[in-house]
Length: 64
Image (cartoon, rainbow, N blue to C red; front, side, top):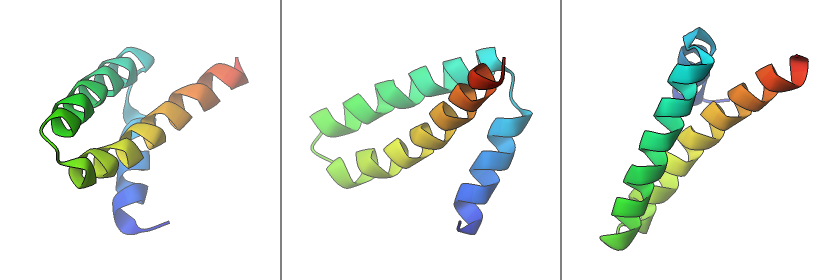
């Protein structure tokens, strides 16, 4: 795992479930904006971040 993904994972671990959900929603909205604007590379980069946050949230919910 590269340093950026590790930092995102560490930040996600420190977030509450509500904060994760809000961040995921905001990232999805930005991804859509970028795709509409034709910047698929930037949208794809954000999708990686979104995936880390979603994985963190899913893992927490699976542990309950």
